[in-house]
Length: 400
Image 1 (cartoon, helix red, strand yellow):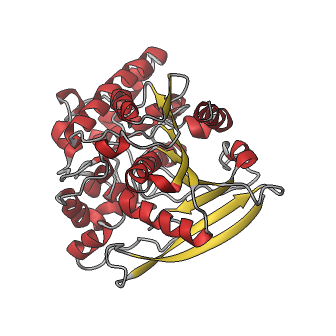
Image 2: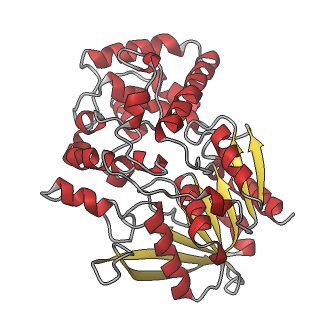
């Protein structure tokens, strides 16, 4: 692979180009003989995660090999992540931090990408959007379809115009099914899980730093159930001695939110909002069987108590509260999408607890150039676990 670094100064607020600026980083990856191939921009899931790094290790994205046959790949570190200007320690004014972060959603990321496209001199390029990256890609189709050659979605076709409460209600329904599936596969784990949660209530389960892990926080390890191999990870965690260092380390590593990527927690719920304020939607629509002393494992649902139960997130509590009340503008335009003449392909995961398949198929229906692949072969991270096959199938679908 031949790697080229790109750094670009962009406005914090693209509507005020003469104001404050931040730096955005992208890594261009080409095969040794592929430096003249067209561009494919990878839009990472999240929000708040940098793009994956290429290497010879198993951590390198599996789909990259297939992509480099047809493309030069642009790995964009979305604003606030990786080698782009980071968002880290909060300031003394939560309202000011919250206002700053209103410029870190999908619409700003797309405008950063447009600045990069112009910088590289590309007339059009292709997109690969994973999860939240697919949300960015759909907004791209709404605001700059003339810049796009083709678009590939993996577990990332967002609902258009749906209230955020409806979106979150659908995720709980899928999680209930995944809990049942887990206990059918590992029936002996029900008693182990109940014992673990009772110990959490008693204050006997701790993270490596000695902080107690609450019942409600421990239940968020259920986000693994939405991933290929995740049910096995939960099962293997429950096999361990709950007082052992190994359990403490592995349990803490399986919690979805922490301060390593604070944007992921602070902005997570806003990524589902196609207009309006979220006002802690997951907490408001949480079904009764997921509340209180429930044993059902939850998913990527964010709650106000995350910023209490997770010590590393406490400095962001007031910022997250302000973000929850922010009235977000619309991201998607159904009328525009029905007129977009860009070839698209999407893999829709039938049992995805993060991006509901019914709502994704509604969005697919809007796009005249969309080819869909509905499958239960993979869960939300199919691009990570079977990347070459998934991307090859999408490329094949898009090109007929």
